Amino acid sequence: MKSAKSYIEKNKNRFLDELIELLKIPSISADSAYKKDMLKTAEAVKKQLEKAGCDTVEICETPGYPIVYGEKMIDKKLPTILVYGHYDVQPPDPLDLWESPPFEPVIKKTKLHPEGAIFARGSCDDKGQMYMHVKALEYMTKTDQLPCNVKFMIEGEEEVGSKNLAGFVAKNKKKLANDVILISDTGMIANDTPSITTGLRGLSYVEVEVTGPNRDLHSGLYGGAVANPINVLAKMIASLHDKNNHITIPGFYDEVEKLSKKEREKMAEAPFNLKDYEKALDIDAVYGEKGYSTNERNSIRPTLDVNGIWGGYIGEGAKTVIAGKAFAKISMRLVPNQDWKKITELFKNHFESIAPKGVRVKVTPHHGGQAYVTPIDSLGYKAAEKAYEETFGKMPIPQRSGGSIPIVALFEKELKSKTILMGFGLDSDAIHSPNEHFGIWNYLKGIETIPQFYHFFTEMSK
Ligand code: BES
Ligand code: MN
Ligand code: MN
Image 1: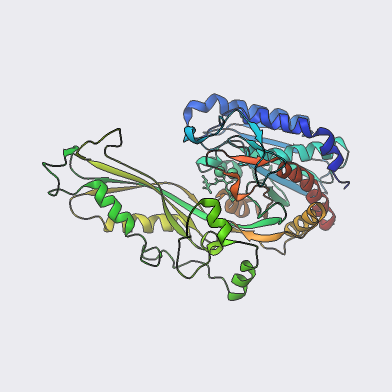
Image 2: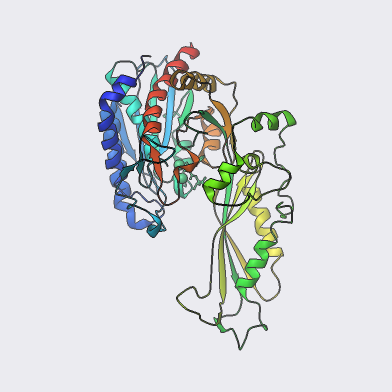
């Protein structure tokens, strides 16, 4: 495979303009007000896949948002790569913290992106990274270098738990048959330290509701005499960690995969500077489970975090009130061998059991998924290593990530193939946060590296 460098250089401005057009559509899957924009985005992805050289592209309806499916089959005897990505994005809130509007992309230079980065919701997660694959396909078809078959499956519900993808996969196993699954929806260590994501954490996401008195009460007349749901909820949540920041839910750690000393030592070799990490977040110290390093805490260990908590009066000024209800959204990040359904059940039982008299507790599961670890001796991983070596001039480091793409474990179960996670974003790209961005260098490097993966994977499959 010839280097895509000169093709990219010639078409760079168009590659950027096309991505910018895609980023202008607010494809927020969590908010039904954006339904039209979701469908518009699916249409735009379809059109671009066709232009890039797919022979057939369809918009596959689901009970939720459609899945865009495209393929270019050149020879049944050659391997098939299945590319997965998502066209939906997270809600941009809080809007006032954005320096430029989330759906009006602008290019700005940053310290880590001296060549400029595109600021927009979805730029890195995942429209920008998904679109690298579309442009990589364009390069291979327009220069007659596509070495194997390719299928694209781009969904619109990843950010809300991929509710309808499992059904689609189960119903379309033949159509989706492949030799390897390729995803760019993660990150890498740094632009001069390429890495391949070898693990994703699982997830259990729940919402809790604590109900006290049947109405909001005067906090003077009733204060001290009835359980205040907000006080109680805060206490219950605080009790979910002990003084060593271990999670106190009985059975929570029972199945947790234990890494060997050797594996942990290997992990510790990845470049990491604690002081820089603290400085970038403006914190004076990190915080977490005793006995584990920062990189272990956010990748190989399970966690429990409140994602949102509300209740009572939060308007201007002061209002003396005991609210009748308090709420929280809680996520648990899981590691290999923990079953998300079992953990959800353990959480529910425990949370209900610690509620004091005087309140009622309701636990509602939202969504979840299993953790995923990919071996580093598979054909796909080795081909990816070679691809990075070719374009970065360095061997990539395997790295387990703390994030989740719950559907990946299911792909392996249903489609029986390994997933290779070639992410090109940086942790500091602010995905899910205000001012999300994606480095132009990273975008173009992805477009350059992907065709090399196709090449090496095909060669090594022979
Ligand atoms: N692309 C992310 C996951 C990710 C990001 C993994 C960076 C590794 C590194 C994905 O879109 C995402 O946000 N997943 C959610 C879970 C989903 C069920 C809402 C997550 O991890 O919170
Ligand atoms: Mn994503
Ligand atoms: Mn995301």
